[in-house]
Length: 188
Image 1: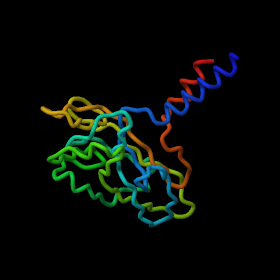
Image 2: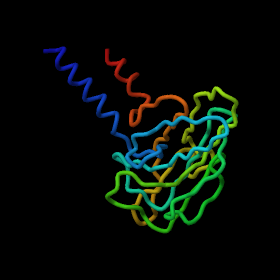
Image 3: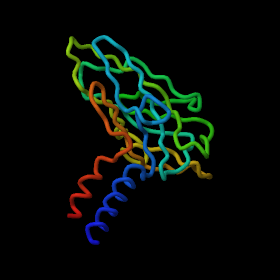
């Protein structure tokens, strides 16, 4: 009976941690948020999309702050295109960007499109595995972090959220928080 209880608990923790979070700015190639990797070859440009994945987080207000890094020096961002819901930007995606709109986003959509990032690989074959990562904006307010505004008036309070990773020339595991397995191992 104890093994059955522990097994059920383990399954609940695994599946619960896969989808329970207070919001994330994530990187995928599809609105279904199931494709978090792609194959890219030398001198090819690929498009990845930036989404706010609500989880148990707040409804997205009119602003986000984050930064994107790329793990390989031979890959670089060639351009960005932001959702029409954001009409002002401050900074750039590689050193830290703040995007601001004039209204809250959908109250019912669990995934909100933020924009597209175009990445090029300047390599001779074979192309390496590398990642694009949403990380803390170093100069964000109220402090360094990945932030969204919550659609709560007055004031649109800032809420800290998670960042996502997109894998080029490798595999990924969509929707699973990296800390989950370590937390489970500590139970035993």
